[in-house]
Structure formats: C-alpha cells, structure tokens
Length: 187
Image: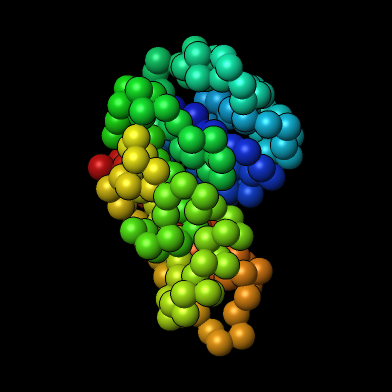
C-alpha cells in the first residue's frame, strides 16, 4: 500500500475526489496517511469525516520546519491539492520526484508566481486563448516548472468568464488528477 500526504489550503474538493477514487479503486494500492492544511479550511473537516489524520500548520516563521517534521518518512507521494503556499527549494529537492501539483491552466502558459485560481482564468480570458485546461506536474523549486505528467483541455468559448472557466477546469482536474496519481504510484 502506497502512502499519500495531501497538502491543502481550501475546501478540499480535489482531496474528496482523491479519497473517492481510492475507495472506488480508480487509484490503486494507495491510502491517504495524512492531510496537512496551511490555514483553517473545510478540507480539514473532510479529512476528519473520513477518519484521516490531519494537521493545521499555519504559515509563519516555523512553517517549513513544522511541515518537514510532520511528513512521515514512509511517504510515497506528496500531493498538492489546492495548496497555496510556495514550498522552499530545499523541501522540493528532498522530495524530488515525489511531489505533484495540479495547476488550473495548460502549462507552461499561465504558470508562476501569482498564477492561481481566478488570476489564471482572468489571464486566459484576457489573452484571447482558444483553449484552457489543467496540468498535473511534478513540483520543483521553480514555480509551475516541473515535468508535466498529464494535461486535459477544453475549448474556450466566446461567452466564457473566469467563473465558467473555473467550473470547466475543475471538471478536468477531477478527471486527470486521479489518473496521474495512479500512474505515478503504479508505474
């Protein structure tokens, strides 16, 4: 059984999708060992509801030390599921090849510092892009610069807004995130 640690910052909808996919067998040979949030959020309640150990490690001076201490040594994969804190390069290097993230755009476009949530969708609309989607990638010390694992895309319609793009991207995330996790854990 492979051990996952999920890092979150929000409501935990991708966390819930991962839990559901483990339960259904869509993600094989895995269990969520720990959920860590960097702020108070509903995702922690989701973890508690599913009897998954969870921690709140608030951002601040000791955040990275506390995060490092909290992650079990037997962790096979760290999954950033809507985690908004930027990880230190040393942390990324230590867990190289064992940390993945989902990004709400087709990387390498619309990635990097400040490109998260509605900021990404607004940038896609403003640029006149004809496609958008989501990308699962390995995490490196460069923000959104790691190797791409999977992408899913859709056409941007004339009447799309940042809100409608967010809804479409979420559906893509629900499709590709479990596939990427299963692919990495069972290669």
